[in-house]
Image 1 (tube, rainbow, N blue to C red):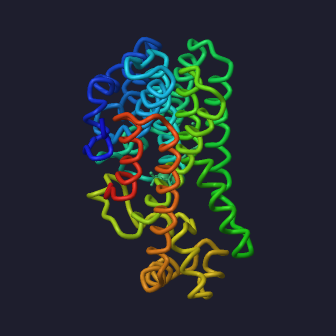
Image 2: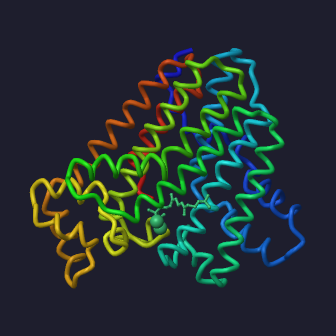
Length: 333
Ligand code: FPP
Ligand code: MG
Ligand code: MG
């Protein structure tokens, strides 16, 4: 069959697999604590309102690789669905910590946990989710998968730490930004899809295709996120926008704008701390071609991901992996 001409909505395609995934995460958390409040905070974001992008991509890759290796009668392995859950749990744990660090008050269209509970409890709820995710990883009984998913947590912490520093020169700065972006966003997606490929028993080169697909999709995703921070609204995003400059962060749109407006350099170095910096930088980004250039780079990574997916056997899942790159690029939230 020619899957290329069919429109395959990845979320519809995986409806049965994704069905109940948040409930399953909630019950996993619940059965590991007898502290009602800890359970309430830890399960707060698993209400089904998220995009579930990470579980969706993990399951899509799992099915695409299983098809590639075993043909059309292959099934999703329970361990692969566990990885989809673990991926969303690590993600949410990091966001809970992130909202405390960023002093953000809104997430997934509702008040963030740090607004509703004190920071000590919130920090521990994030740790608890991560701890339960670690137990789930251990139960998979695969050293390779344990290593790959542990790398994610190492990367997340380092990516977040890198964000606290600024680099002097323009070249250093862009490289720093890209490494940071890989660590804080792309590593989770890349290593989750690598994990499901490993569980499938795929050969090394297929696992590498999966990893590179996830890396490129993740980079594209974060570039779009950094772009939307300048052009979208809090209402559309379900989280505050125009936030990065206020947090002192110079993301791709500003780094590109710097080429045309070098007066941004000192502002980047002082992390937009002087009165008027945030407003001025925001205006210069909009006057520059920085937003277009960011979208262009996001598109290149999306196209690279789609090209990599072509190396897998043709299937509805392979086709949906390719379409996912467009979903990420054209998303408005
Ligand atoms: C969101 O970025 C933050 C991340 C993607 C990673 C945060 C990682 C940590 C806090 C390290 C600790 C990790 C764990 C697993 C406990 P953002 O602030 O740019 O995006 P936002 O607009 O969604 O807040
Ligand atoms: Mg944040
Ligand atoms: Mg942050």
